[in-house]
Amino acid sequence: MDLSLVIPIYNEAENIPLLINAITKSLNNTNLVYEIICVDDGSQDGSTEVLKNILMTTSCLKAIVLRRNYGQTPAMAAGFENARGNVIITLDGDLQNDPTDIPLLLQKLEEGYDLVSGWRKNRQDDALTRLLPSKIANWIIGKITGVKLHDYGCSLKAYRKELIADMNLYGELHRFLPALAYIEGAKITEIPVNHHPRRFGKSKYGLGRTFRVIMDLLTVFFIKKFLTRPMHVFGFFGLISMILGFFIGIYLSFLKLGLGRSIGDRPLLILCVLLILTGVQLFSFGLLGELLMRTYHESQKRPIYRIRDIYFNSGNQK
Ligand code: UDP
Ligand code: MG
Figure 1 (tube, rainbow, N blue to C red):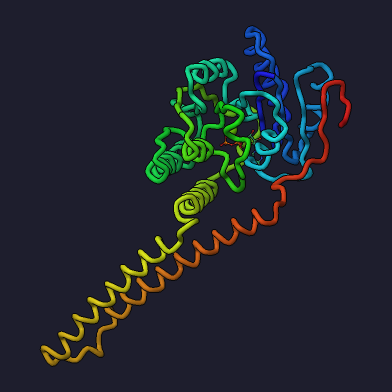
Figure 2 (figure 1 turned 120 degrees about the vertical axis):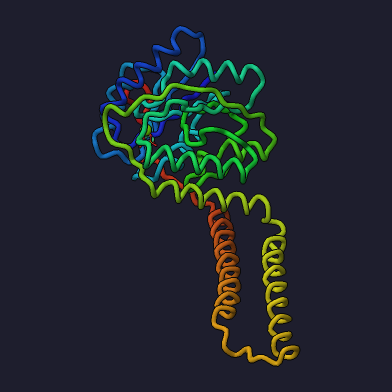
């Protein structure tokens, strides 16, 4: 198997037939051996039936049906775990990504890259609620991870299989695979890809997602950087706050002892000290909480999704 396409599906009934058609059309004139893995993430609009119907006539299609709606990252993780190809390509199930770009991604892999990310240069989504937040998010992500991609959020990406073999995904992490892979030494690049407006169905995301994305990112970053030595971060902020307190103490002592003024009546100063200290504490606790959460998740070894059924061609159930 050369290639596995992994497609998360959540209520995309109208899009699925067109998508499968477009993919087979784009790949049938290459001589690649491929499979299309559609992960039905608890759809309620009949997507499951649509998939089962197409299965009858499409031998390369596999449908993994999850027990409920888990989210895009778990759906993709389910696809990854069941993929047999040497190369994995991810794309959305809503036809916003263009299957004709797939050969271009593969070409880049052949040039020696381990991961190729799509860049929706002319992204067809709402400017204010989607484009602007994602521009800011991409900038922050680039700054924090050191991997400067224009478009982390683009689902159309190609990976060498070994890259994602042992990634523990959760939350919104699928989009950070480039950054996570880079930390493991992967060679990464991006190419401009097409992007189409959604014709059928609705987008499942709004502004709230940008927030979740950034929180996940911060967690990952701090975990990677400080997991072995949390004192480096707590110690740093602790030291800064102690130094600040120390200088304020000196200043106040000077006022009191040197100039003989009263220092009992300075609410602003007290407020400032309080804010700094509580800020540091909240930050540390937040971070500790996140670290604990991560430890909790990893020690539990609970899957982030559960599979109800896997269907192959001929409609047979495994
Ligand atoms: N998706 C999913 N589970 C979810 C939400 C979304 O599998 O809980 C799928 C969805 O069907 C689509 C892809 O993830 O194939 C991207 O979702 P969407 O098109 O809504 O995101 P947008 O393009 O608006 O960022
Ligand atoms: Mg979409």
